[in-house]
Length: 585
Image (tube, rainbow, N blue to C red; front, side, top):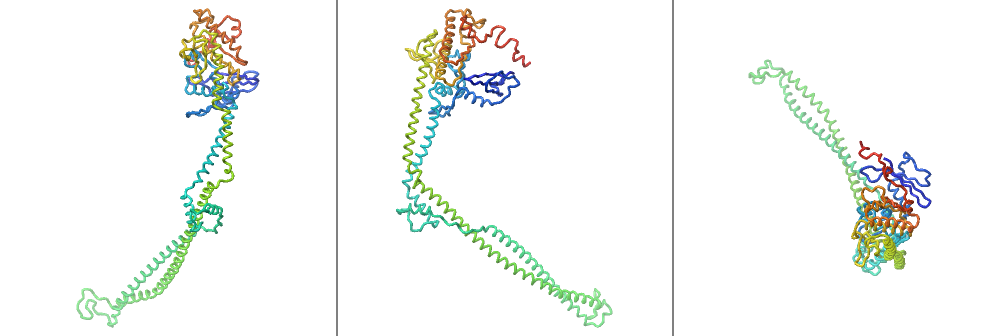
């Protein structure tokens, strides 16, 4: 779909803006093209590439329209400050078909949420009740008020500290004693206690000697302790094993010696027994045959050999056990030394920790003391606070007098009075209900009010659709008369969409007055366009009144004012254009 484009001219500046057609389901397109400067010819479609965001476009067009920095700050409520921009200005430039004939809606888009309040907030700026200097003064007033609040807070802080409680001073004195910074005989109620605390705050503590970190030393000693204990455990296991072996060897030697003694009894026999089945002593028959002397001597020899080997190994085991016990004594002494050094390191580490804690506590105390003394003894910058506060108050009062809200209200009322007089003058050219009465624009309710002998009559109580259209037309023409008179930053154009809709039948062909049945209605249409002609002559240049309507008056001036006439085959939307359903198919 083709984009929409707009060519804007203000003084010697030109701006060309194009925006893509969003299509069904969207209100605005996201693709925006902007060209600044003299435009020799309009760009081709393929040249309309996005080069600016929608938000940046609004800010640029706001500045292009001459809307300077401004901000409406509500005096009550929770609404945030609002800056007038081009969107707010355009509320006064369009009168759609359903708006111009409305009894409840005087301005464009006033049926949308929050926009009526935005219109009320920005009208004072657009009507000139507040100017750019007003906003500069507001900023200066805010800065002065903030500085004054800070100075007053500092002064209040000083005053509040003049009546210090004794308990706070007593707490400081007791803390100083506990940390060894004051002698024990010093009392909080002494007359010179503040001076003593001041001198204490000025005292500079000497840097402490190098305080080693015993953490690594303690860890190393604990590691040595564990290693020695493991070594001692292993040595104790070794000596227990040696003692068990020696004990077993001794038992074996004793048993073997007893057996050898019994076997040596063989020396009682010179010869072996003749019959091994007969006892050599009592000559009784044995159930088991007795061993021969040779066999007994052989057993005795084996036992004596083992005894000899056992006696040979005993000195080595005794020596090994002596060595192990010596190493145990050595490791035990070493363990005692390491544990002693470990206890000393732990005690020293605790002493160092206490020193560090005391240094930290002293530093914290000095910090609290300095903060306390700053309150008691203000520095040079706060000594002349009274004079500064007095000067700031005078300056703030002067600023407030220059931006007095009453003055703003008065200027707003003056502007509305002049606009109302113009509305009243224009109403005399139309045959409207309450025509000729004192008319005014009520910006609180955003409507037209006629002040009559019977009281104020708002627009929604002014009869029929012809009246509503007439009051819309004369109100907006009067409003633009004032805007151009005061050179306000509102675009110098006004669009009326079918202001004569209430007079023409639905099957109108050429828009001639003859198509209107009643003479009074024909006269009303004629008067309505003559009012527009008169207003265009009254409103200062530049100003454009754009009317989209069926009417086609026979007057020469009306014919000269026609720019395009879309009737019959020469319609605004040609008959051969496809419809939406056709384009989808």
